Amino acid sequence: MKRLLFIFLIISFTVQLSDAQLWKLRRWEANFGVGPSFSFPDIGGYTIGKNFLGFRDLSYRQTAFNINGSLKSRLSRTLNARLSLTYAMLHSTDVRGSNEGREYKAITSLFEPSILMEYYFIKNKYESSYLFLRGKSLWTLFSSLDFYAFAGIGGAGFNVKGNDALVASPGFKKSGFSAVIPGGVGATLIYTPNINFGLELGARYSLTDYLDGYHSEVYSKAKDVYYLLNFTVTYKLKTGPNGLPSFR
Image 1 (cartoon, one colour):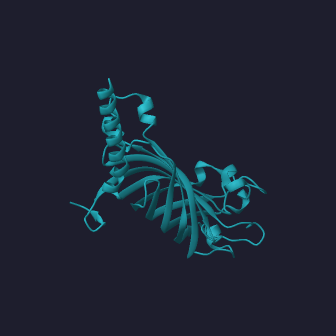
Image 2 (cartoon, rainbow, N blue to C red):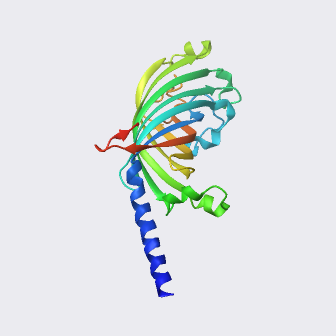
């Protein structure tokens, strides 16, 4: 009995030690995401007055799409640094909005580079458990989920295509660049030793009021905000002898 207990303790310690070091073999991760984008500018919107983070104006008419790619470096088991490149389309219209009489419409093309930090506030305890996921229970599946928050700094270069009414308005601006402050939350599922699937919701707080090409001293009370919802796939890269990602 004592011998069996000793063997069990040795195996448990070995598994935990292996799991603790496993992430170091995959310090680099390539990530791809795609999903809808939601903008909350001065064009469109149903709510006049207080509108927490723009959510009260969420509408499919203000919805477009985005794609992004990023390279992550794992600084520790719960902390990642991430370089992200995003292309997004933003759509805004006064149709059925609070200023429908203006008849403004805008489609914004936006390119956003950003540097982010990710903190995993819920991290699965056994990263090696993905080796045994298939055919296991839902509890095993849920125990392989990670949840994280992220924040950082970025920039947005944008170009606006407006309808005739918007272009003729005195507050129209066709293009520009602005700093943006990203922040949000996400979840990932360890599926195989090399692949994760995930879902991420991020907000971008811009320092401009021209993402929709329009600014008004009367109606513009805050800077523009947009959101990105992404379904993500992550591929884990091997770490080379020099600490950089290896593509072999």
